[in-house]
Amino acid sequence: MCGICCVFSSVDGSDQHTHEQSRLAHRGPDRSHQCSLNLACGLKATFIGHVLHLRGNCLATQPAEDAYGNLLLWNGEIFDGIEVPDGESDTDVLLAKLGCCKNEDEILATMAQVHGPWSFIYWQKDNQSLWFGRDMFGRRSLLWHLPSDWKDEFYLSSVKLDNKVHTEVPAIGIFKLTPPASQTGCYSITVFPWRLAVWPGTLEPVQQDFSNRLSAGQSLSEGYVQVTLSSNEVPSHRPTINRTFPPDGLSRPPALPGQSHLEYLQDPKEAGSDDENVLQTSEQYRKLSDQLLSVLLMAVKTRVHNHVPLKRQTVINDSSVDSTVEQNSNGCNSLDMPDTCMKSEARIAILFSGGIDSTVIAALADRCVPIREPIDLLNVAFEQIPKEQDKRRKRCEHASESNRWSVPDRLTGYTALSELNPDRPWNFIEVNVTGEELKITREAHIKELVYPLVTVLDDSIGCAVWFATRGCGTLGNGPHQGARIVSTARVVLCGMGADEQLAGYSRHRNVYQAGGLEALNEELELELSRISARNLGRDDRVITDHGKESRFPFLDEKVVQYLAGLPTHQKACLDLSRGLGEKFLLRLCAVQLQLMSTSTLAKRAIQFGSRIAKLENSKEKATDVCDRL
Image (cartoon, rainbow, N blue to C red):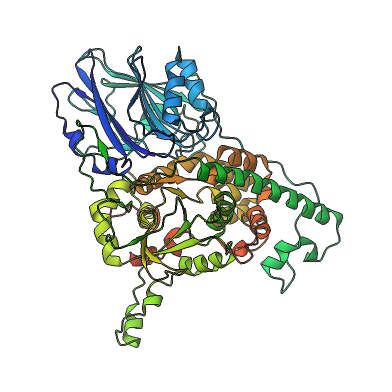
């Protein structure tokens, strides 16, 4: 991934933004570059790129420029849809294709072909137009600041750069900006919406209340910024879900008294019915789980093979960039572990709670990575502080070291590790975070990455993911167990997206119990529409801050298409109990992968599994505005 930024400012304005790039530069530790263009209207356009080199034999420069003077800032991966030959940079391939586009339709068609996570900024010289946007799932961050007058800058950036108000560019389509022709003119922004585009977090089409929603959180000056919604829709990869009801009489039988969840998963026929439909269902589920494993395996394979094994190197700075980032060889930023830490030597890491989503990804990654190559399992825990009554009972003695970090995700993490391939050199990295370290680091750094999101949930998840993916901790297994270690992996596989598609949240069960399958279908349709608004931009900002890239196999376009095409009753069976009925199809996949204990684990969110939520005000609600941010 990369840190990308574009600023439109008056020619005689300040260049302060060029000196406040530490958060932006963390995202791209391998090369930094910027260039500026003076526009006829008296504005200056500044393009800034910080490159994390993952693809191509040669280290590319961003912004990339073609022979026609077009500029591209690309924060993404092309996994499919557009061919990227081995050894070539997808930035160069995309720039070449965009440079050949003769009109708006061809630009839109080119971006619609891309499979993979992305945000981009493209300056089209001939038309003096700026194109930008995020993929339909919002897997990459892009913030903007809309100007209120001539002296105010227009910003596009992966992260917040200064104290101006920023909001996330909504993942509703492709944007085209035309700068003002004179100081009395205005910025013109046209949005070409994705097919089936709705406002993030809703099922309401983008045509409703367009101007107000587009600028939500910012004051939009009608005299200075004009927005238009085009009737020209862009083809999207977001499917509609299959709302087919099960045939009459076809249902899964209840588990027998005393029968474990694992026994039920391994042999549904043993549930005590000889009905022919049950046998047919069993055979069908085997076929479906085979198919899901196949598309997931391909998604994981693409994400672990599609980058170069490049060791961390000193930042290559263009002379025009004032970079304030301190880098060193272990891959952490200026909030580093000591240099005495051993390095994992892994290329791939997994955000690993021991839950079914991350463990299935780990088992599939094991099939894709050479067997002697290590894989890092990043497991985060927050310090457990005894309650006052416990302190009195223990006479204020400190809890043992093991008890301090025995959070649920640590325990399930080790259980899951025991079920993974024993011939693989797994590095189980215990990332232990004290309350004091959390407080200091959040205030000094993390809250600026979580911004512009502000809820208690954003705080908890943002902090937990930041510490986990930094990968600095203690090795929990192997011959060097107990050693301080830092993950060298530049690619982090994450399990986000499974719950939204496979009815994994408790609210899905509540919806189903209240309104049946029809209501559940409606909720799952809503889940797909709001993925971009809920967390992925935030997760991109906190993970890539370490000079690492997040990749989400469950949000691969082909995986999403496959799961959306299945009727809901084939993916989840919410008449069955918790730890069995939700994500039912994925549980069968886990059994096939011999992840027996993992296959029946109930959903546990990272803020509870890591116990970060217990360090804060227990009376807070997830949706409350967090005063720590």
